[in-house]
Image (cartoon, rainbow, N blue to C red; front, side):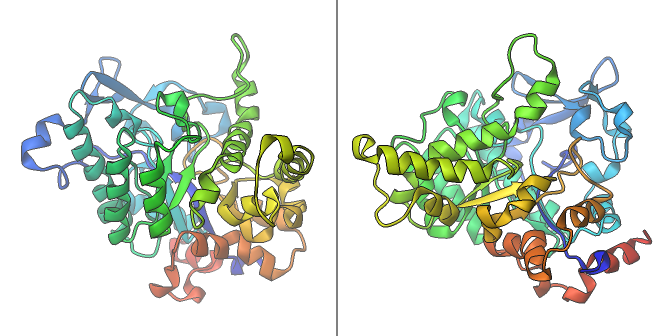
Length: 396
């Protein structure tokens, strides 16, 4: 396949929320309680909500900067690329990168809306969750139909409210929701009980994919006191492995036969061994651990319920058949420091090598469109959706 003919859909990007995002979506009686972006004494920006102050962290918005300038210091909107928070500029940056579609995770509200779970008044917190989701679907995604996969945040403190929000968002065309890779680390019950069943049932019924982004437990495996941050960055896929292992041996995948999960930014190179290991554990130990997958092996169950997501992973691409080509989706990660923007097509195709066009298409966009019920071609023809066509439109 020629690079110019490639079609790219990313299942993991991020938005830095703009200061006016609440204006149209918070009812008048609650507007005084909405988060506000303020300028701090040192000139950096921070969101204020209740007693919480959340700065814009520089490492979360480094698109366009050389690696030598990456840092984790708080920053301000003026110092980051406009495509991080301005939807019109985001589309221009997508076109420059030849990127057709994008699913964007939240920033300051945290991966699964944890900020609002700490509201002094959870009624207000619920209003803010719904306002965030309406802004995300109606403005961020809705301004350019066919370019974004909508992704909602849950009112994570109440599984019944979570279920209602899944149904509400599905009616608006949103079939993805963020959740924690390990809710117990956030102080909520683990997935091994039945606490989350109303939420899981709603996702099962609506075909809503539950996205478990690395770091969504607000913890990272493998970081010991005094260790350099490189240790954490290297070990991040272990969070995804941990989450996948918990899910597989829990009752969730058998209790909800149509439920789907995405291991967002989890990488894929570790999967061949993991899939082999879970089958070995099952065959050797199921009689005394009392696991029962019927006529399936655990690896088959994992493939039936999980989508595996990666940014750059040559080892995983080489082992794609052991993982399952139909289970692999690609990520750009704009504007974070792991992102391949604005050279994503070049990076992607370098790892594809001489793969058949059919396999490339599955990984680059077809799997994402199928899993997340995303149909960009209802808006624009495929001929206008390629890397070459989008970059030509951008003048890149």
